Length: 310
View 1 (cartoon, rainbow, N blue to C red):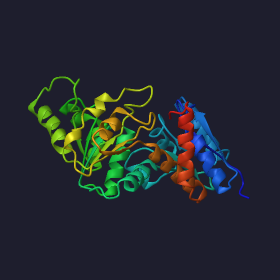
View 2 (view 1 turned 120 degrees about the horizontal axis):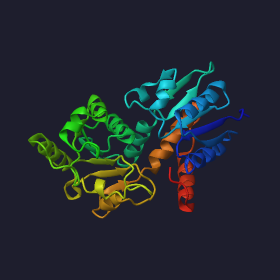
View 3 (view 1 turned 180 degrees about the vertical axis):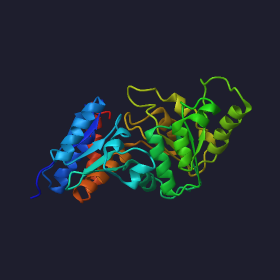
View 4 (view 1 turned 60 degrees about the vertical axis):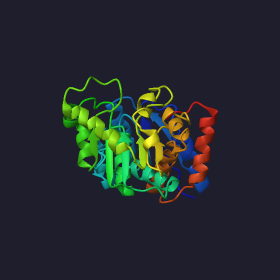
């Protein structure tokens, strides 16, 4: 039998993470004696301390979630190509010599989930709502799926000047996507013709889009209610084969997903992405493919029982 190892997810807050449930059932299904913990890491100093445990072998590998996905790159000895473009990592692996290698499985997990759920959708135009880590992962996923045009907007890009100077806008621009000012209500009045034109460009491009990804925390339990992101999608003018994906998975029905479903548009929440990124982590650590269906059922059961939101 394989030697038992301790794996963990690092983040803050982390107490309600679904990852221990998903990983525990995966290891049991594979007949592996490993355990998986959620470790609250509120500060940069505590992150360093936990990574020292990983280097020493006290931990076999770690997942990383907010707020440390970018910071861990500074502590990795090697950065896999999957983490270079998004500038963030959610998996750290320990080599035999104690060196740490950083990976990002979020983009591939999202791409895999979209491909499985909407295999026949066209790959012409994708719209991404959100300029943070999930938004960057969504851009990378759309690129891997072969979309010809990817447009991104963010609530933090209220004016055209924000798009010109924002580091996150520059990042998605470097990735080959088109960053556009936030087109929804509530932003300052347009201060230039450029602002107005760019806002209109979002609406023009969204009409006929075949994929819309909601990549913010809007709609999540305890977060923004979600109407603001719902209302920047021209639901009645999307492509005939349009697919809507919300990275939020609790609650099961967000305002974004409800808007899609009420119009007969195929839509899905982000639980599949969560399960698939966990599975890719397990492959990196153990070399074995875990059963996605078993992991998914365990995650759904935990959500039905309540108390898990991360």
